Image (cartoon, rainbow, N blue to C red):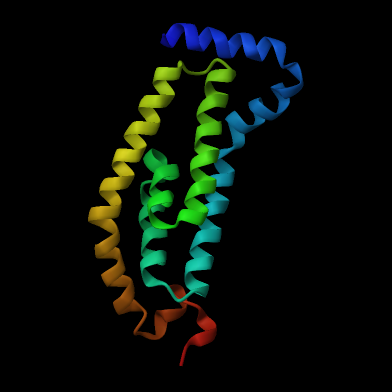
Length: 150
């Protein structure tokens, strides 16, 4: 099935020349969107005075090379949904341009999801506690909305 799905997607690529530019660019440079989403989620968490959110974004950033899409989904549904959709599109484009077989990208998505889930359970609580302590110091501006500092 993996080989037939690969051939089907590649035949689709042969019939959708209009999409080559977008899919090729996204396959190469789409990771930048994920970096932007992390920055936006970090700023959003700070502005919401949410230490757990900041900790979650920090945890996700640490696992980004392995598990970006699902990790953010488990921390913040709004940004995580956007990220998960973009991760699936990225996986599709990697098959579309012939860089990977479908099983490769599915395994990568599954491994990334597992690592992200473990990170949320193990790393985020520890980071949350540390950031809550940091938020009680003069370095609060690094964690939460600096406008609300005493």
